[in-house]
Amino acid sequence: MRMVKSLLLGTAAGLIAVGGAQAADLPVKAKAVEYVKICSLYGAGFYYIPGSDTCIKLGGYLRAEVALNAGGNYSAQYNGVSAANNRLTNYYSMRAREDLNIDTRTATEYGVVRTYFDAVFTWTTGSYAGAGTGTTAYDSAPAGTSGNGSVSGGALGVYYAFIQFAGFTMGKSVSQFDAPWINYPGNNFDQLVGGSGSTNGVTQFTYTADFGQGVTAAISAQDQTQFFTTNLWNTAGMSTSGVLGGAYGSNDIGGTRSPDLVGMVRVDQAWGLFQASVAAHDNHVGYYGATETTGHPEDKWGWAVQLALSIKNIPTGAGDVINISGVYTDGASRYNFQSLAATSYSMFGSSNAAYQSIGFAGVSDAVFGPGGNLELTKTYGFRGAYTHNWSPYWNTALYGAWAAVNYSSTAKGLICGSAAFATLTGTCNPDFNIGQVGVITRWTPVKNLTFSADFTYSHLDQKYSGAITTGALTSVAKPAATYELKDQDTYSLLLRAQRNW
Image (cartoon, rainbow, N blue to C red; front, side):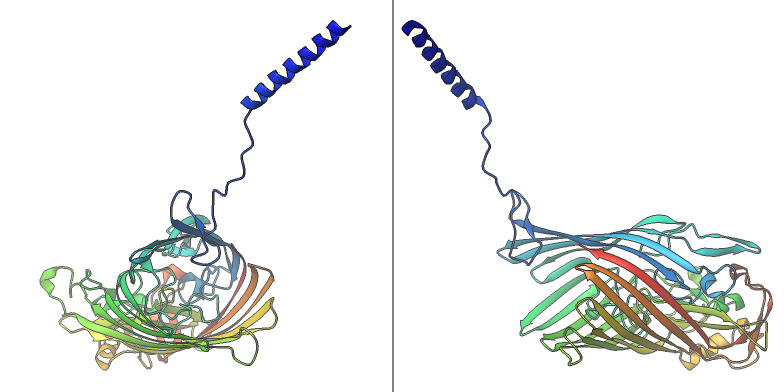
């Protein structure tokens, strides 16, 4: 018995030893390691890229919306088939969009090095366009740089891509001329006039100086070709159909000679902010005729100035704010009719005196005729909004804008003296005003999820009177007829759901 007991104990000891050896060979669960560390240097949402001293933040939004009685997402019925008020006009336009932005920052002996990238992936219903007599089709061409898509198609848009280092900004960013709210003092409506706005970014080389106490100043050279040139009309190319579409000739833009030069001073305080901006814009056209032997007018520099004011902590409620700006331009009209605003108007309505009525107008930087000089176009305007917070979940903004376009007497002579107005009976005056008012209400039931409804009314105050007779306008399915020249009105509604992250 004693021998059996000793044998059993020895066997058990051996098994325990073997088991311990095998256990030593098994993987041991390591202590959790924080592979991605929080970076608190630049605010919430930043993390260190593993293995580096660079901090990164990812952000963006997903948006779904429908625009009713509009020219697209999100614009008004100012021209083309959207303003024809016939069977070619879309009653709605729908869009889904995902925005992605990447912000990186690294501390160096020269200060913080920052890179920023913002892109949008968009799916949009297409626009309807006339393609000739009795023929129409959904537009298959991408509509602009904002990612509007084509026939219910997708598009990629790059809004911002820039480097910041030692006070310099290099790349595609918001214009230094813009107010901090860009195109949106309180609205979602894209086409608000009355000031500059480069929502989609403009390529630039900028130096910004910080003087402390909330005072900053910047000087910038920015690309004029993408957003900051409207039209340079050669009246030799005028036609009646073109005029009624809001174009006073052929757009005769020449090659680039100089970027726009911008200066800005801003004061940020607890009560709000004040900003003053100035810009110089070179107007450079091609030739009087089809070849270089026809000659050309000399360049003329235009300019613009804008003042912007934001007032916070007003007594109507916590978080309420008033944003306003005013602008004057001479030969630099895009600083009033911002990058998403219409520069041609051709709106049809009813008439008791003719087949239908039409209101048409156009915006230019300059006008010229064969052998003549550039005649710069003057504009001025303002826009603003008051936003009131009813509760932490609801707010409403009332907003409005107004802009005026004035042509010189020489430019009026070139335009009104054209054969394009030969059938006009009444007053010829290409000056015009455009006014816009709107109201938007937003509901944020949970953090970063917002539902909004934005209603906008627009009035085109054109200065023509009488009637004009034209041939068929096939692009909008309008017949050869006499049309009354008359002010026009339009309205639109945008319904949007947006989740920020």
